[in-house]
Amino acid sequence: MRQELLSVLCIGVCLSGCAHAQKYERPAAPITSTWPQSATTPSQSLTGAVAAETKWQDFFTDKNLQSVIGLALSNNRDLRIAALNVDRTQALYRIQRSQQFPELDATAGADLYRVPKDLSATGGAYTYRQYNLGGSVNWELDLFGRVRSLKREALEQFFSTEQARSAAQISLVAQVANTYLTLAADRENLKLAQATLDAQQASLELVKQTRDAGIGSDLDLRQAESQVEAARVDIARYTGQISLDENALNLLVGAPVAATLLPNELDTHGVTKELSAGLPSDVLLRRPDISAAEHQLKSANANIGAARAALFPRITLTGGGGVMSPGLSDLFKNDPQTWSFSPQIVLPIFDAGARRANLKVARIDRDVAVAEYEKAIQSGFREVSDSLTLRSKLTEQQEAQQALVGTLEDTYRLSDLRYKAGIDGYLTVLVAQRSMYAAQQALVNLRLARQSNLVTLYKVLGGGV
Image (cartoon, rainbow, N blue to C red; front, top):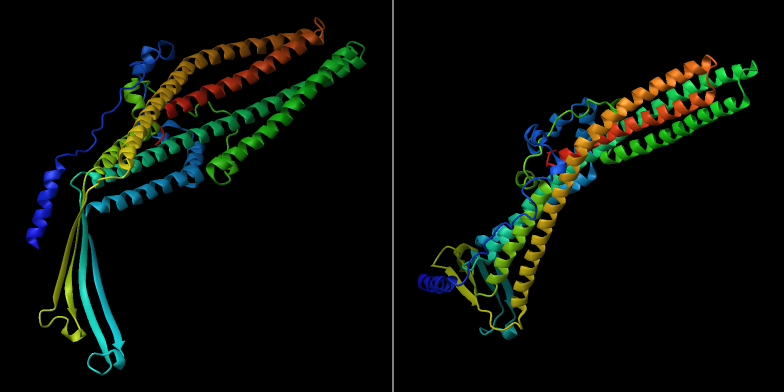
């Protein structure tokens, strides 16, 4: 038996020099080495926290928002599916990894049958009995790397799925935060509309009094009434939008969110961490979605090695051993040992080009994975560039809008005083109030846009895990 085994191993070693594993080389990133000049300034690039090293609990300082995000990470069904996919690919990897080792089985059996008298060589009926106890082994000698390549492919698939779960978590954290902030902004807009309605109703009462006293006109009264109705329209609109925001938040969280955790207004201190832009080569390669794409590329690369190994002989060793006896009491008596050894070499000769075509498919799959990896890097580069560009511009807009609101508030106050003093008509007050209200709404929307931009920037820079 030893001589036969050594002969098989010698043949395999002689043939194994013809194959080797497919070497992986990371493709060059199809982007520039720095962010666009319009996207960042030197101070923004060098200062601030690194998103990939900043946990979401440290980035979002609002305690209620932290609680809502925590609930979403526990209950969201999409994230749960992503986690189950990780467990599944891990099990598939373990299955493929097991192919590297011999398969051992223990066997026990009995073979009993009765021979009738008419068929018996002795002239009498008798019962044939045979008992056996032993084991068997089956092992493929992976001399050409087929099993190792398949194991590597499964491992990279597992890594890719794991990174995809991290990307799903980052996306969920950002979605919950943005929906939470949108709800806060709509609630603040509702408060603004309600305050405007209260002020308009007070103005309407004053206009009625002046009209009844013969000082005002019906035109002033109708203009005041139009402002009241416009404020009521906004109240109805924002009330409906708040319900939609709450429904969206409940879906993301995966359970109803307690009213005590919902925001009342857009708090400017909800997101306070400043983030460093860093260098594209450092930032993008740390993003889970890009890392997942690279693991897919490595998996496709390993599959080439498996397809190439299929062109070479496949060597399998099968053996078994045990004891066999016609009686249970004699299983370990009178030298009942038995064994078998069946080495097998399968050498591909003709398959109408199927194996060659499979190798070509594997190489094309690798080229597709390269294109997808490069596309992921390009998409990530654009997302970060857009977010960095908006960061500075939104800050400038918010500052300018804040100054505009202050100016229009003074304009409305002076117009109202002049109307009450009888110097100007109500139209001046109406125009000033409309301008002030629109500017206040725009300021709330700009504050929301700025905070949403910070959340998006945190996401695209690879934070959130």
